[in-house]
Image (cartoon, rainbow, N blue to C red; front, side, top):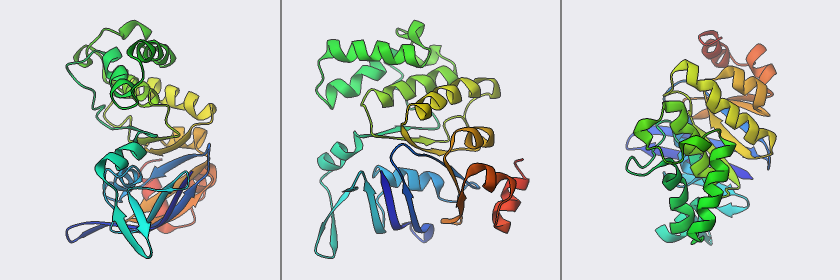
Length: 250
């Protein structure tokens, strides 16, 4: 589903990604861990072209992301074409990013109607179904300010699913939540993983990574330091940098 080939990204003089290469199979759940500033979130944003890469190639489902290739050169896609690619990739952010002036239902209905041109009645029916799925059926008419952080994040997941994505990206989806609210969001993500959704999750929730991920990738300094089965990486890491990081968490 995802192929990253020597992906590089800098912000001015700061090199954030130093040639990331990895593959994610269809239906696989990959958890990205690592210290702040290691490039995890930037890599996630490159996958749906919210950030432009400086070198390398990124493919989603066999399609080059954000660019077209002509000979040896890459040309950035027109924003309209980049947006067309992006609609197949669901993304859930750390801080929810819900429209504050729209209800939970309206937040979910907006993109299918505006972007996919789905009939509003059909989009509303689907939105109610997704709210039930994330345990929020009784909050359809609530505004974000009336919801807890965990509830807002579950609405954000429903909003991403409304576009029927082939891939879901989660950028530290629980880090802004109070500890007692983390479980309700992780529960929804567990269900998605169990249904075969391809997922990349940037997280500090090691219990979730151990239980749900097919593969765990440790990043530091903009490179992939270690990758493997979660239980092996967490209990017997091969690299000293991984050991040092995990010793502060576990």
